[in-house]
Length: 115
Image 1 (cartoon, rainbow, N blue to C red):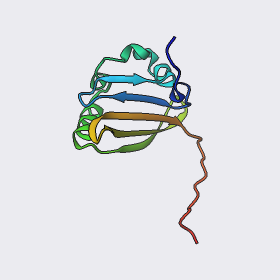
Image 2 (cartoon, helix red, strand yellow):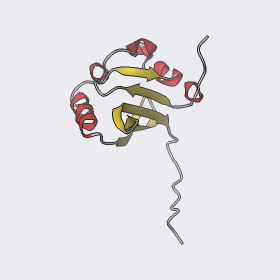
Image 3 (cartoon, rainbow, N blue to C red):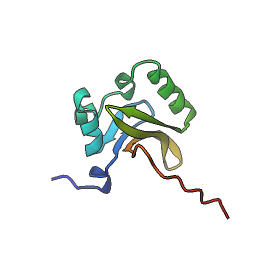
Image 4 (cartoon, rainbow, N blue to C red):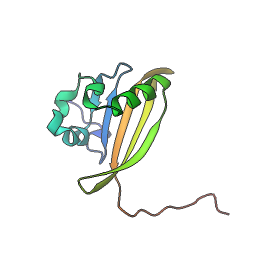
């Protein structure tokens, strides 16, 4: 039996790819989110093949520039925060991580800069 990690049952989809776009890891929520596309069978596949244009080109540009991309979407009545960011191993670019979190339709915002 494989070792369980904290992110296996974390309530957000976590997908990790290498610098060439090969999917290295998916937690349970990610596999469920992408079940229609193959779920965990996507591990070893190229993330670019999972995105239509213009998303494919945008992701390629983000990875080449090692830039973070964050936005919200609504799909099937569910609002989500999508956060895509580079990850590093020993200071070297190692690929990209995508987090997909369900967020409430109305969410409080607190300004901690106020005195």
